[in-house]
Image (cartoon, rainbow, N blue to C red; front, side):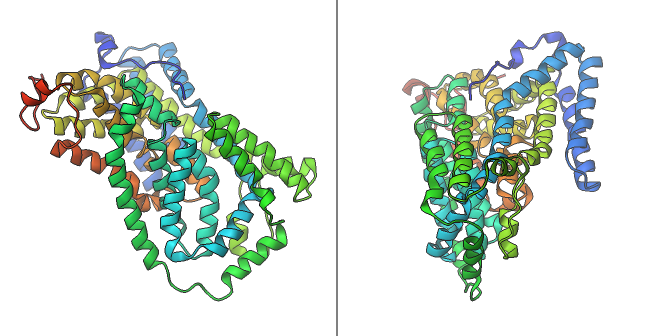
Length: 487
């Protein structure tokens, strides 16, 4: 995604309106309080607590920080513009999943998957396949919203808990996404830190490989523990229900092949996914025998299959376009709150304070990771989590004599990968809605998202994989310290 505007860095915020670190923490504390009370104590959905946070941050911005209502509104507008692609993809993915179920694409994948896969190999197979697909098309979201949905169904048929399967899909999808030159977040991390794309990718590979290998081994262990006997007749019952309700045919793979082919050849996510909807409707009419209006009604209102097997009905019953509204309201509210925090300088101040608080390369790496993860929770958008620290901390990396690829790697290893942990962020909302598993449920099994930042911290602490601008800087710098004094 091409960023439509450039957020202000800490130095670009007018001094009279620049919040202190303590002042910047006030709206953050308010947001945490509102979300905690609303979601944990009162059991509410996140929309209203986010609305409280918007009102509180807006009042502080207007009457304490001194911004006009027009400036705050512009901040909200720019933030929503940054997340517009995510919003549109949410609409499209809901339609796509409904179309692919109605066309028989996902039921056919489930049918054949249940025939060829076993519980013992399913989880590591899912990790590896998701990584390959995401690398080829450059999108973790497209991988999760298409292949991931089918793997959830196959895993359920094999007796694998859905949160485990979701964690396997995400671990593979984000591994491939991080290392693909086609990925928008990979290109964005390189662009905002002024790093050559392939230098950025090469800097990420060692840490990514370690985190991916660790994730794969953990899923091998889980798979071995899940490889007990499948209840007699269970798979046959599910396959029978699928055959009785859908035409099971390789022809139903056409929508999937068209979508992945377009993505592989460089088409952006939206036209690739959009094409998948139209091709899916075409297969619904030609292969499944549905009428034109009926096929598009499913895309609009969702599916309600009656296969005679309760588990299969639950897996294949999804909302269409209308079901995306609840999800999109969370994303829009979170982006609005993030826009106010960005416009008032709160996010830049916090990122800057974290960066200035460190006194070594290890501390700078840890501070970058902490700031980036914090941005994910505060701005609720992975693009902003990359952009704000990536732009704000560049001068600090220069002061330490470090190449820009250290910064680009840090913001992506801790930003892109952890976005799926934020229940109200676009990444968490999308993954939870597409896979049908809540963030809280899949988080313990999303091993790559846990290991990726930890490996980054280990690299910073040991100095392994840290790139200095030249040998002179490296030789004059004691291990773990900066080459010159930092205020």
